[in-house]
Image (cartoon, rainbow, N blue to C red):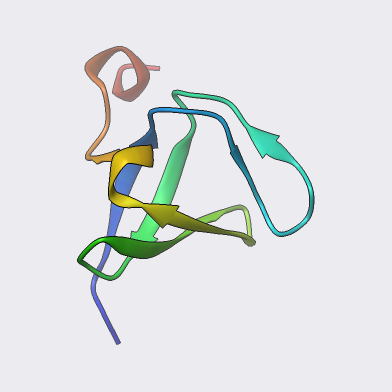
Amino acid sequence: MSAQRLGTLLVPVPGLSGTTYPPGTTVTVRGRGATVDAFVGGDWLPLSWWEFSDGLREDIADR
């Protein structure tokens, strides 16, 4: 199992549930490479490398 880490969406991304998550949403990321699996409250978001950044933005982390 790959280690999990936190990331931040850079663009709006639809989850498997049909919900679209806005930029700035914190996601749990699994995997490495050009595509990864990300999750928001159990909703799966298959992400490409350009759709998220590793870690949290400071303004989000301070909330």
